[in-house]
Length: 280
Image 1: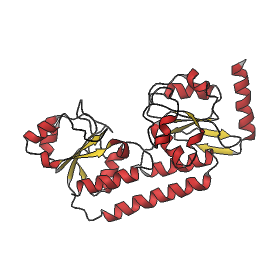
Image 2: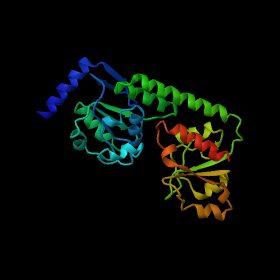
Image 3: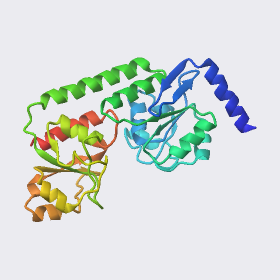
């Protein structure tokens, strides 16, 4: 009976939808009115919703949704890789926002099948971050604010490109993991950020977006800077001692992971910090 009612609601929204956005999965998200109750299944989408001024509409989110500070007060349903369908349904959301790369793919597909509107995001380029906030703006009834934020982000990116156009092209190794040496290629958003800074990513040519590389391969490519994403202040990588043994201690830099690893509007600040870090 409950499933039947949901499907009737879905067809009603489909027939009378005034709001339509095609998400990054190629699916049309249809709403009869701006979303009032939202479930966010990714920290970066939680950030984007707060940027639009609708953080108070988020009924529930996932672990690590920690920015801005108000996001910490939102109830958690799990993490970006594991949330149950039942937990989401209990929130009776008007809109669910999800991350395509996260492990919740099966969850949001089941929710779609039940008739819930699900906006799926996957930024494959830095400009796509601007597109995401603009699309979300439409879905939450803040189209003008979404356009303004998108335009500001794109203008900021272009300014950073221009200001680093004549950089000295230092060679950079970006370390995103401690247990193993994981890095990024040129297609990854961080790889694109390194390029904006006028630097050379020493693993830009590898096939995978996030490859695991060997200590020996890093040494062989001899970077000018090693940038380590830091999960908290005063963080020190377990690899630092090995870099120090090579006489590379002066090459090691750290950057706040939340600034540079999440495809939110704060990534603009993260790129600026990255450029300053490798320009020292």
